[in-house]
Length: 438
Image (tube, rainbow, N blue to C red):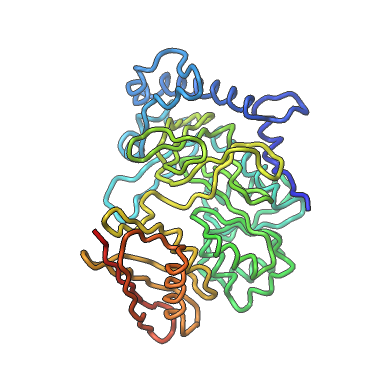
């Protein structure tokens, strides 16, 4: 069966300014990105006092080659907290939207990111073409994201869908899964866009079958998406599940997968990505995993230059099986801190725990923590439906993943103990003990 080519392929060709009928390729993309890196650097130094001082040592005409960009200094989330106004290029009158991002669990000052009207239009444009993978004229799309504020992510998406001849139905984040299902049925939504665990809560409802034959596609966004979670949503509705990667710093839109589901097709005309070793800051070869570093190529109000995203991922070599060309990124597993430290240099990647637990029908979410010092106890708090045996099933799933080597714990001794149940399965605690080996 042939796979539909991503609609971002001709979109990228137009963004690169290629003649009609010419396909984008690596050479045309790199020539464009080199030109735009020079433009962005000149724009930042010419209009931002913070960038002007910080980038003063870089020579005129920098970068001479694309690989020279690695010599520019890195920027961080701390810069967005402490220097956001000095990073602004132009007056505050040119700003159409300010997004304030509070850091969960800390008293640190919030990050602030500024967007001009032109910056927001670039996001609408990306959403317009990216959503063409999933919907077409006449389709209704249930938007389960914040959308009540003008130019919020849900509002930008709804306006982008209008350009496709589709209709965006702004519902907002899911607080009542049953009510969201009713809305999806009433609107005959061919597609829904939402947060993974919230969409899963809808798919697990007994009445979820009412959407079979109505929902064709689901787009999961705003958080890491375990494959096991995607599979459960797909089974519930007989639909195809797509994933989007983005963050406020990317302009909300970052990359979306295609029908081949072999990585995100990135917004390569607007964003330039590198992957670095988070310890040394050195750029890693194509295909290696590390911290994703972002440079905006077309941002006016607040360009970001070599911004450390804190996300863990890798760029993909070679063409996509769909036949479309854009830069591609493998599925992002989460944040750099998305590990549990087991001691003695051993770490448990949380995404491996995600895959083991979200494969369980009835499990809606969980929290994990390590307690103790010499002897560590992995404690998992499970949120489920009415299944009375969820605690036992969760223990069995983790144990099976350990035995199969799907959870990489490193040099530790393992002792399991039964997980007590509260009788409902809704909030159950359990533990597995680890002892690091010297």
